Image 1 (cartoon, one colour):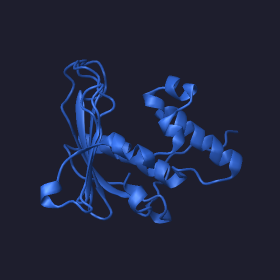
Image 2: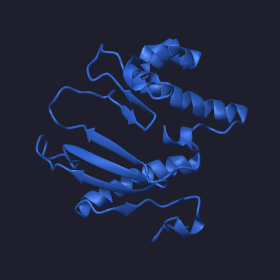
Image 3: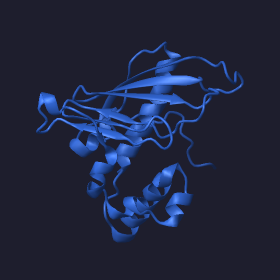
Image 4: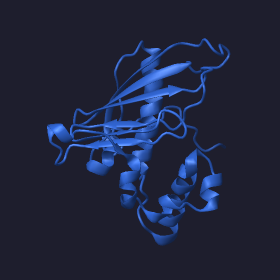
Length: 193
């Protein structure tokens, strides 16, 4: 979402804390973690991950809040998502709009996804990511998620583990576009004789 507004935006550092292991102590992950990603511009992203607690599964809740608009996904299945857009809204006209009011802005493939998308998992999201990758290779177009974004987003998750291990300390995410910031592989396996 943040690179849609500014393609040069990136995650600069992360801070992550976890609750510890309570629900399933044998599992290596904390029950719940909160990850704060500070972007280069100073913007902040908060990600809460809870894969182990015994509450009902809620995979599809997302919220995006900015100074000129907000998106709130449904908290419970069957409820609509809501949007607030500041453009042209006076104080008296400040109210939430149903997400469906913006359906005309979506690509047709998302409004009427093919059956294989619906069967693929994550509400069709898995299908569309793979479809985009295949189309990029087949048609020679750049993928929506390029190599550097993929590395950076993966590194943010790995750096979050370092942050948890260090009591929630801030950890800088390498900028893989800058050669001097790329991590070196120590003890990388070489050719075997």
